[in-house]
Image (cartoon, rainbow, N blue to C red; front, side, top):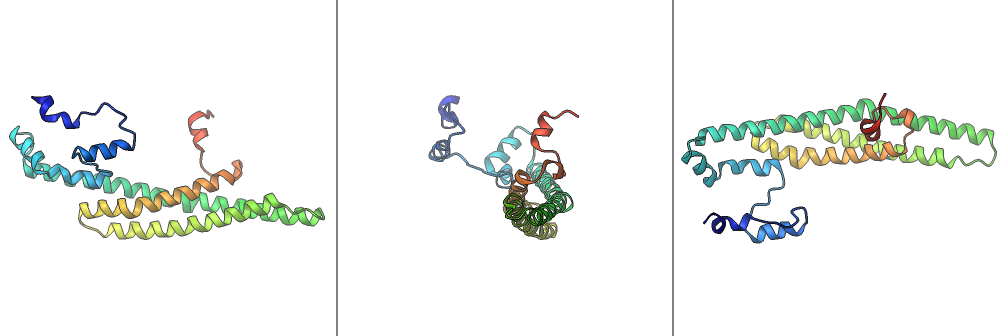
Length: 203
């Protein structure tokens, strides 16, 4: 009886394959892609009935737990956003600016000392870093604006969706710009440990 009633959720294939998304939809299963999207389903009628019938949680208790989970999510993403903002503004951007200036000064010196020297590495790298740092600076300002707006939202559910839809994408874009800068910034000038150093470095 159990197998017959619940067979639609049994899947022995590759759950990481994109085809599983289509298969799950065909079976009528939820495809919840984010925490804010998933949490409200705690109050689905079937879930409330299940917990109430077994005297685990009442509706009011489930509701309070939902709000707690939403508030936890909001606090976590806010902390991550503020941390990313601080790292970009106070560590990465100043370090990259200093390194780019060193490259530019080096290019000027080389071209003055060596007639015909084009200093392509110095100038090309400095130009790339300036373009990336300009983009990262703009994203940092945008992230700050989004975090400020999120802080004004009172509803945990509304705030959780705003953080997911607006703050996380900007954080991802800022992260990508910083990752690109890391690949062309001198090792001695990069202010934070690389993944390689964190995973394999012993000092």
